Length: 356
Image (cartoon, rainbow, N blue to C red; front, side, top):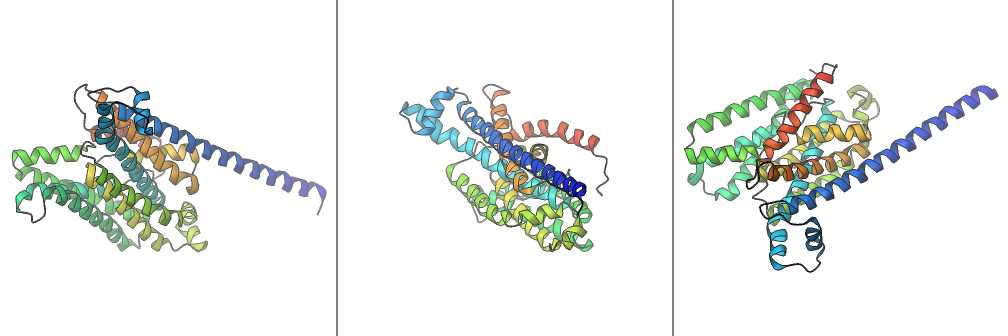
């Protein structure tokens, strides 16, 4: 081989290696910064409330340093479960949104915009309307039924879209159809509900972290922890899927089976999060896009960063919900929607490609 072409190939190879190393460093820095923001959000969330606490005092209580008994009770019994629930729910929604955008190759996809959260909302509203006629106490029936209908919605999206061989376009159309279906049925339940039940339905649909507790937190954390290893096993397949169905198949990826596994994960992550805190919108849409801007499309960095961005976003939204109206707690679902809707509109205006 001539010296000149060989030198050119070596130069190009070095440039590729340098670019890859720079991208890797950028991903690690993004993960580190998101983790710092998340920790700051937890401390602020725990410090914020009707009785404001200094952040330093909160940090001492969390780390186990001696503090006043009243501060210890406020931090560990009331505020810390709420703050940690915001992290786990945000991470679950951010991760589920990232998976859905990857398998559908659609930047507007999330469990909220494709009807899975609406299915959970209908399941919860159904229990609230039926009330005392149920054999199970309402405190348990609401999250169980919300999880059931979120799973049914996720299964419906997959199997209706499967009529078109589980193509990304068919899945998106199926999700939009189920979104409107569940919203219509929830509105029907609101029409026939009593005033007390109607108020409870509306409050649940707004989303709230205030009923969080250690038991619920451990359930959500267990589901999230169980999903992560399963997801990590498919990281390279998800990265290949970003090249398109045909190229992923040529690389040996079973696209249909991958989408089915991914929908199971999305169903688990979304249903267990929404079941305990209500429908919280746009976290699963916004967090993956922030992660994508910082880490790119490589799923090894994109998926963990989406989870951290979702956790940080919901934690900061929880702080905002307690400071917008002093003395009252603003519904966190409204806060996330106020953040997400302008982002969503901007995304639509910037997106030139037609996805369905």
